[in-house]
Length: 164
Image 1 (tube, one colour):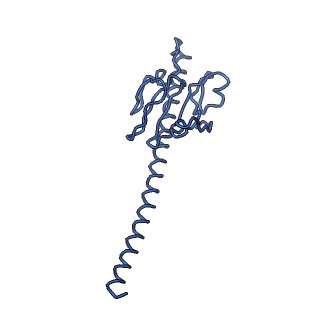
Image 2 (cartoon, rainbow, N blue to C red; image 1 turned 30 degrees about the vertical axis):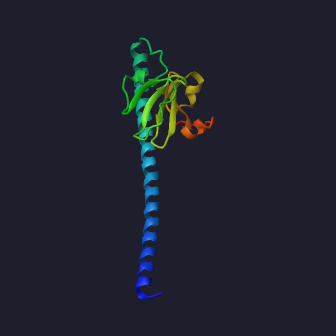
Image 3 (cartoon, helix red, strand yellow; image 1 turned 120 degrees about the horizontal axis):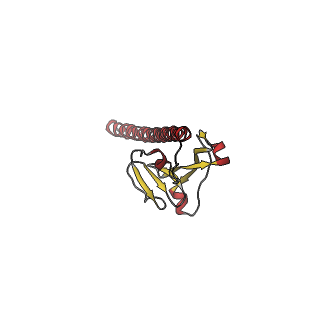
């Protein structure tokens, strides 16, 4: 192999190394983006919880009727960005931004991540509210499960009950 052949070989190895490094960087950036999206969902859920507590405290102080709906967004009267509204079941998969929606079939507020994973929340009362992160008068908002579109397509649902 001559000098020119050796340089081409070195150049090819350099390109391969740069390509592998670029792939690793892209994967790391995707994980960071997913972590930021999860943090935004947790922040929005915390804001909804605070507004629910405010609504319930106001009800206790002033009286009146509480909404009959299981949709916590009806209770607080505010919609998060990218809210699709109340729908029957889950919306079709999209490649755009994450979306919030209220699943009337399951009675849950859900956020569909860009990756297809979902975070689901339920307005709980009575003994179930004791497990919620924040509750007042036996009413709270609890994260109920993680859900992934790929599991739903195969008939299974990945659950990990938790509240944050």
